Image (tube, rainbow over all chains, first blue to last red; front, side, top):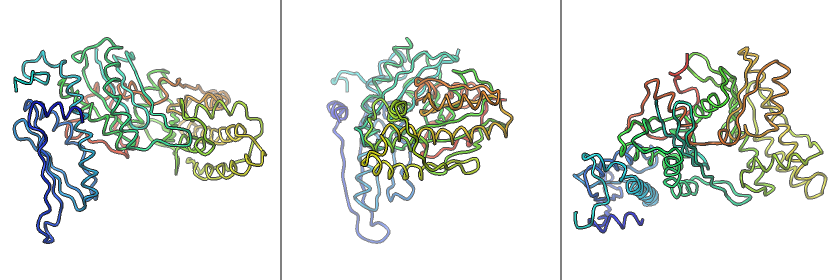
Length: 126
Length: 335
């Protein structure tokens, strides 16, 4: 969580909203959405690449979709129950946190390449 | 020259190793050790791995004296293993592969053990006994697959040993199996246990239930010691493993045996297998705890072979899987 906070200093903190849609049979699902702002589109793309491959369990009653909007990673959940939603969101945040830590720890390695500008910018630059 | 970094964390060990053309440049590892009487749970194990993985990665690069630009390929364990720890390690592997602009290779954990054993011992075409906390298989290579000749039909031999250790509260430090091995040396009385070889397969869950009950009864009434039970359990389960290995050798007319996996560093198992090999005029190959027990270099080595034969794993295909049989992998790097 410390990394999330660090990131939050530069950009907007995580925005989230939770809504239970109207109770007809089609849409009786919990929804949750999370926007994670990154300092650059490239970093957001790396996070998407790392966090996307592992699917949610097929019969777990939870769906998760990751997309990119510029330098913001958008995550949307739909779930049958709050219990499974909580587990999925919790573990996603653990995973996100580890990916961010990895980026911070190893971003200096790639700074030589002008095409991949990552992390360690002074807060005023963003 | 091809340099591959390997990430392993399918169970309670997290290891990252770097291999350059058959040479192990670094292979740091950490083990999640639980209190006596307790096993390791997936979420706790994943938390352990998360807390140390970046430190281990830095160590691996520093000890090898390499920069990220020296790495040609990033290999990681795709499976089999515990889901949460596997994901943790895969996340870091994917992230650095993208940051460094290097290809990924997803490695079958069992293949990692086999290739590391072949590299270290130089065994050419051995019958492989793969014994650990999660797997028990007798394997031989034929026609581009590592084929499973025999395996456990329930729990792994290492799981049987670990769970027995929990029942009588043997320490998990450095590992329950190591401590059982040391105690077994002081055992003198053989307590008869079920011997469950079923054709080419073995079964350990019944032995575990039996010895759990025996421990409760016999230790309380001082009919035998904990050391006697450790000794009896080892003698029984290892005899079963030697039997199915010998049968596989006879099937394949093989003159080489390679023991890999965490239980493979048990010297009593190696000794018993050695006696069988001597009788058949065969050669036994085994490694020590550095390479027998899960480590990063073994994933790097299998990844090196796969990468050199043209295999890579695209990012979107880099999902982990808890079940992944040894014979699912096409061996593209052997004749």
